[in-house]
Amino acid sequence: MTVTTLPTAHIASPAPAATAGALAIRPEQTSWTPEQAAVLRQSGIKEQVTSAELAGFLHLCQRTGLDPFSRQIYLIGRWSKKDGRDVYTPQTGIDGYRVIAQRVTAQTGGTYGYEDTVWCDPSGRWRDVWLATEPPAAAKVTVIRNGQRFSAVATFREYVQTFPDGNPKGLWAKMPAGQIAKCAEALALRKAFPHDLAGVYTDEEMAQADNPAPQMQAAPQQADEWATAAPRRDYLAEARAAGTVDEVREIYRAAMAEFGPGTATAQEIAEIGRQLAASSETPTADLDPAAEAAYDGPRNGGTPETAAEHADGAEEALRLAASRANLLTLDADFERVYGLPISEAGAVQLHAFRKKIEGAA
Image (cartoon, rainbow, N blue to C red):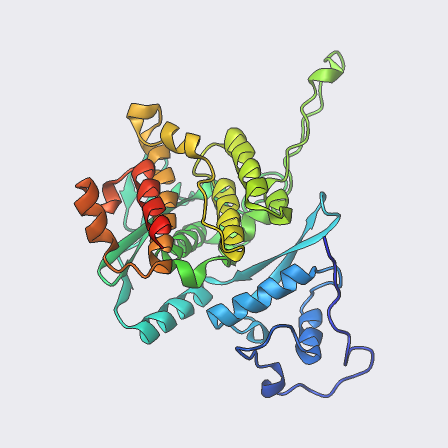
């Protein structure tokens, strides 16, 4: 992997204050200017950041219109044992997502809004206000864009940020209902605006990435040393370092085998694979066709919960393919072919229709 350093101009000696014009990101810009690089270094980006991470961050800032110098979007480094360095991931706040959604709606026309947020208790009952002292089990947010509903559910256990003892920390302890609602809103907005929000995640979604690694319990002295569990793989770090879609696909399958479908880890790896496929201008392949069939409803051995989670990812991929193909009649075409709306379809049908769109593009 090629490692580069940010330009060091204006860093060795005190530099004059940069003007807004000097820091403004231009549409035709292909690399960071020395003035911009100096400010990025001051924000905490280390010299070991890779050229690919810097180039990807610049492209994302240009595509989303978010300003890194106003702290609307930023690169967060997290230590990777595999890479032996900090691996950088773009992040924004939920306000950044809302800014993009409002801007895109204003530029393209149409409408965008929300239904009421609801929370789920551990027994599975949904409530439109959360009054209990313990955290909710999940939150659901529905975004309505141009009359279409885009719903997403985020479970508390998958996103909560914790101390080493497992207790929630920071705002996850003080305002758990609000934090998990932001995660659900981010998921729903990414469904409603797939092209504009692909590749950038919110702080609330990524907070769990800073959780301490689970401690392995010491084996009894009489235990067989060959039975000691191996350390858990860092699937996300492996996926980010992969160079081909096939490599990401293998990592995705391994993560599915360990964690199961619909988890945050599997969804993020799948998104990495889709972005890699798009960047190489190759059709986006199914990351796990066998898992699609196994979890596409109870008749194929799955459960209603896993079927819904898997269908959500398939619907997001379908709508992204339709957006790229400029297909404006997606919902009507799908219902005419299958006799049911997209919201009631299973993952296999959704992926099959996506392949038809990509094949015709």
